Length: 238
Image (cartoon, rainbow, N blue to C red; front, side, top):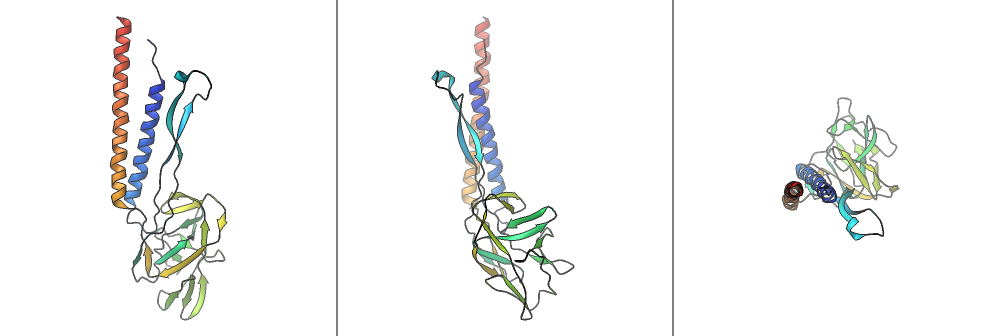
């Protein structure tokens, strides 16, 4: 007796989507306490195969991955009083120079390296509005205003570059790359604050439970289908 592969494809695809949802939700939960982290969603689509105008018995649908958009809503600001902790209020990103090029981030937890350059936790450089690295003498007598202008001992040192995009994609370590052209940024920079993640841990735990149940259901259905196919083959041979 011939095996009907259509329901197997449907269930296998559904199980793969459920696993992707588990991975994304787990990543969101793991970054609840990461400054500037933005929640990621899983967007699915329904795929019909084959696309024909013939018999409906040959037409079936299964879930496919479409996109994993980043939710860019504002996170709550947390006061730290650290001179190089910076929070962005509004739509925009810090420009960060890495060995692989410029990336964008909302994580404003910065430090001075051994040469006095402002860097993030991974040693990558914060850039000014001219695209240059920013070097300071110390963190004393340091003031950063709402426009991102950095003053030390009352003298203007640099202005932090903020870039804005309609859509971005995550590239790891709270870094993003643009999926669209740059648009004007209207932001306020708050010194001595960090923007918390916009992930709601309670909602994400609920989503995690739902994703686990969904994955288990697909697994159970595939095992049941396999059992039914085996019994049908046994009857066919009888």
